[in-house]
Amino acid sequence: MDESPEAPQQPPTAKDIAAEYRAKITAPDSDYKPGDRLPAARALAKELHVQLMTVQSAYSQLRDEGLVLSQQGRGTFVRDPSVPLGTEPGSSPAFTALATELSTIHDALRVLGERLDRLEQIVGSETPPAP
Image 1 (cartoon, rainbow, N blue to C red):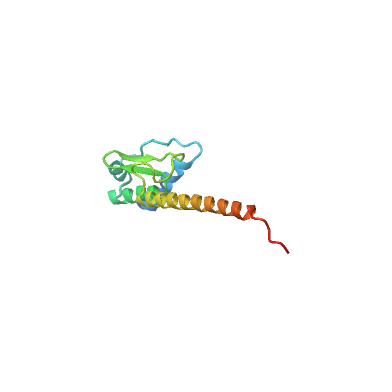
Image 2: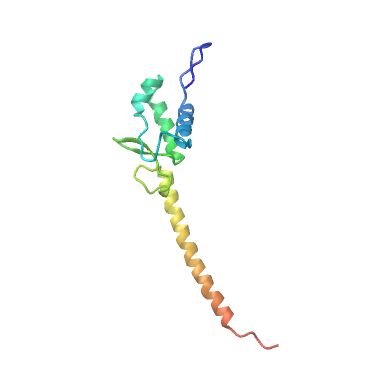
């Protein structure tokens, strides 16, 4: 967070912290690569002079955006974007539910596509009625 000599600095909000780490994670020359651990929430809260809940909320925002994974007792890690959302341990429950729903929809569309192909073959093989 930038320090301004003119006025006393307000502690960052969860939104500020999330924005800072979002930028750090998504920057092309980022120091944070998939699998890297973010600072421990307690340590970061102490460093930033904010409540632990503020950092936890910021990390939760990043997890809900699919940028990080949280593993209880281990920490918060940068998510590998090449792995499908919702499939890793520590994924946001919302992404896990969404991934399951999308998989179900994909299967239903595949079955409907196969049925349509069969119907088109049947209709295409019939001889047209005589005029």
